[in-house]
Length: 358
Ligand code: SF4
Image (cartoon, rainbow, N blue to C red):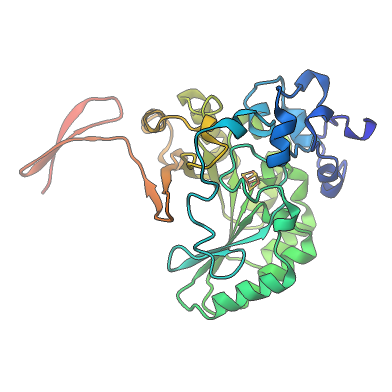
């Protein structure tokens, strides 16, 4: 199918982001021969949509590589042992459709169901890549009314799906509604577009976002090969506009759960002015179990980062508790023992030191 041929797009001005997104592959049989989908991929797509835009496709080098595995359906999505598609009980913590209120001082608004690519490990697999999951204007109004009546809420986080898959006018209207609420101090956007569809970060978008400072953008990045020249340029446009950038990475088995890959990723993020923020252990979500490494693997990766990279490049490694209990940071164990008057600790090299309490 000619219109589905992969296009190498390294010039952000070459095509409009909508055109690139519109040419996403949604059927495994349309993948180019060199990137053939595994058996069973079509059946997976009947349960969980596939979407790989031509830009992201152009970054994939071979079947089974770390980018291919993030976006190409895998039969294990239908055969895993995990059974809960909403283990964080987001639905139960939604007082109005599309708004999650878990922590007292902030809410998450799932404004868009669309994504620049559909990630197979997504913890919102029940919603991701489904345009019908985007909020209607009335639902955005209802979410804003909820926040207006909740004075403890000081931050509104836009998520989805990906909020930057909304057209500028829709995004602006949503941001305006929440920014106008007196007790809302900051806005935050969680997005994968700077690395999965960097053409989305247009000059017009940056001008729009700048109107809503203080606004933070957290970029979801999982592999150093996602940090291309267009991705770097997209992040630079945001950073130059005064928008602080943080990162979110999911620890993915066989994709980035090793010291070398994670160090390369964290160093690259710092270089492009994205401050490493969260390293998420994958949640216990139905259809994603094959992406979950043992927790000890995550702790070992963290141990390898501490002392080897600048502190600013060390993310917080977190698990999100099933049942809506929230995030808990996990740290490698540096305390050997706690004695009267002093602590016995190990440093990043494994050497033991005694540290006085007073
Ligand atoms: S991780 Fe983000 S971009 Fe990927 S499928 Fe989930 S919501 Fe969409």
